[in-house]
Image 1: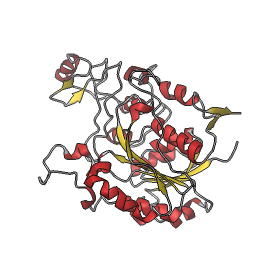
Image 2: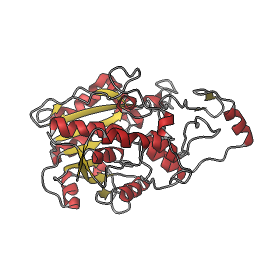
Image 3: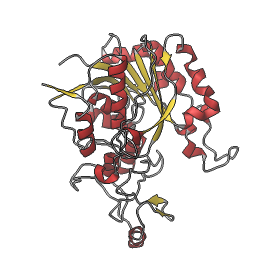
Image 4: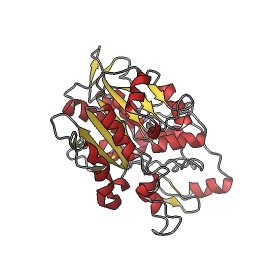
Amino acid sequence: MTEKIKSVSLFAGAGGIDLGFKWAGIDTIAAVEITDYACSTLKRNFPDTKVIGPPDYSGDVRMITGEDIRKLTGYYGEIDIVTGGPPCQPFSIASGQRWAKGDERYTRTGADNKEVGDLLPDFVRIISELKPKVFLLENVEGLLSWNDGEYVSKSLESILNEYHISKPQVLNAVDYGVPQYRKRFFLIGTRLNKAPSLPENTHDSDGFLYPLYTTVMEALEDFSEELPNHVTRKHSPETIERYSKLNFGERDKLGRVDRLHPDQPSKTIISGGNRGGGRSHLHPFLPRTLSPRECARIQTFPDDFIFEGSIARQFTQVGNAVPPLMAFNLGKYIVEELLHGKVGLNREEHNIKHPIVNRIVNNSVWIEA
């Protein structure tokens, strides 16, 4: 097998980007993450990746240099890709829409939030230190509109003389085969002699040019109650009665949860926040909320990808992740269009334990002996 393309993952979370990149033939040599439960998840699912985070390291990108990453991995060759999604809460439209701007409860504070909001410059700093051929920036869609895009453009100023930058765009995961409406901001930069763009969609709503959007029912196909991370909440009889009366797509106003429609993509899988309990939508056929594993199916994580930590933090990791199938499409574009490589899986990797992903990925790559 040819040598894999090498990537460094910043703000790695549970590794959604890294898993999708793996399917595209990209080897994540280092993953930097600050939360202990996500580091445990990374170590379990990516045994060959150097996880830079608790308990052995702080995982705080502000305290890490490119040289630190090279020393810890022992790799001093050219790095192909650096990826990252700096913490997004201060730029989140969802976090700000509940209160009016100026109210002390208004949380969309952007770069003014010095505790967690201004980490994009550190992402750019590590790009300048490692000098990868390509970088991928991911974030909430609110980052693109914050201050009319000035924050993003100013943060990238120091590397614009070296990197060609794609037009910043908000992509919807549903357009790439993910059974979920999920909008995220993406930007690709490269110091190769080519202007980057972003991958074209692979699915659409009418099935005219591309296959139809994938659905919740397809995501939950052949679901086993014995799967890992499949822990369901115990609801009161009153709650179960309320949930039982809901039509597909209808919201339970008291619990503020939505019953998913089986023949449509899911609403965005949410994380539930780092301080509170995990949250999920309602199962389309059962009067209960989804389990972390059911949410992971909708996020396109395969069944053998295990999430560590408490049930609430499993929801957090699943909800915060970039869907691996979407990451695969981004990785495939980078490999084929920018690095001029060939995307392929080996025999041990090609049987992906997910009903949608296995079909889509295997139809998109070649299988090595």
